[in-house]
Length: 148
Image (cartoon, rainbow, N blue to C red):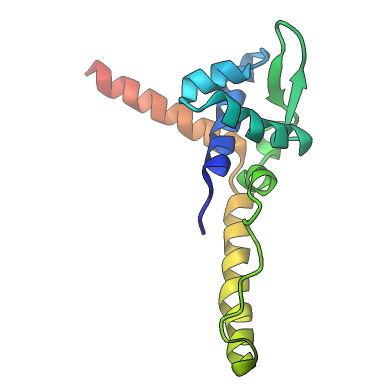
């Protein structure tokens, strides 16, 4: 499985928006772009899809920005990636076609469908709360190491 840059950026942006908005403030695309080092224009494309998919909510105005549409534990990595990845679970191309239909069926049923189901299960089991907690832990661990 390969996740595109848009998928990776979208997931990183949701984590950052979740972290910044924990105190109730709205988060601007510029602040996320600056913090993550991601192009603002590219980030806006991913955020538009996340807004349309009810992962993010926007507020317009001079103090406007984004926040999560649902609780941290109600949004999964799968929710985010399905919105921005066009080919996350697309059908596999035929391998043998009509020449060996039994092998084609075997590959589809025993390999590709199981692989998709496994990926879906893993991604649906990872919440934004999990990712925010882990990122915070990493930040704390790095701060501790620097202070030694």
